[in-house]
Length: 347
Image: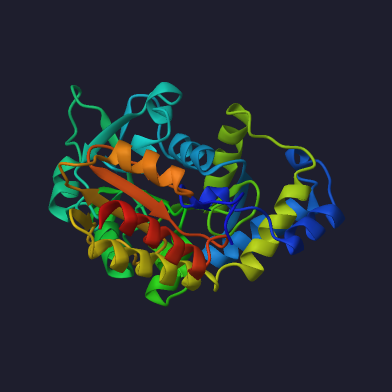
């Protein structure tokens, strides 16, 4: 279904709550969540933690806050976190770990499949030395946004866990789209989170809830993260009206992510047949399609502008690359409409 008359492929954050979510929000039982007395929030946090195979959960307004609260709970000022140079935590979160936590990101190159080279991760762990910051954390992302929705599988997670254990380090997983990864691999999300000490996942992307993410980990870790959330201004009061939509999202919106993946696959195949367009290696495996445009007659900015005039919206993501994201409000017919517009412009 086209949104506001156009096929909007800018992001799965555009998803609007389903009728079932709106009904649940209207009927939600609420209390003061800062006091721990909102029963709907408490239920969401328990269900989220169980889904991720963790002991406890924390409802936060956004994935960015969840990631930052996690880093603040794991690290102190002057510490260092190993993170990919294309990671959302490094690229799109306004430098929060440095600006608000005094934590230095140690960036390593993300490979096209979203992974970090294991040898490089181990080499990046600082030796004890008064001149160096102290390595405290390894951060990963699944699926990987800027790597075309690439999926990190359980075997890779275990290899990072082995390095972390060898050096006594925790692992944080930015699992904003972990359910997309789980559906693509045909495994429970908990399998992909098992080797992470903490994991965030987003309710307001492909799962279509209006607001929120959940951070999961041990009970002691969540206690520390709850304090960080309060410091960041994320203590909410009668938040059950939001959490209610999150519960519906977990119950009803996970399995249907396969439809988004199929639509992304069709977009990828269509784009791959157009002159000068090269999809990223993992494009269309989940719900994100990143592609490069190499033509003399039109650049990415021009393509974005001209496609918008055709009723198809998406973003450039730097250099010659652009990104399309499918979601529950993009139908198979919308995909065909978008591809027809691309063909008119690109041949």
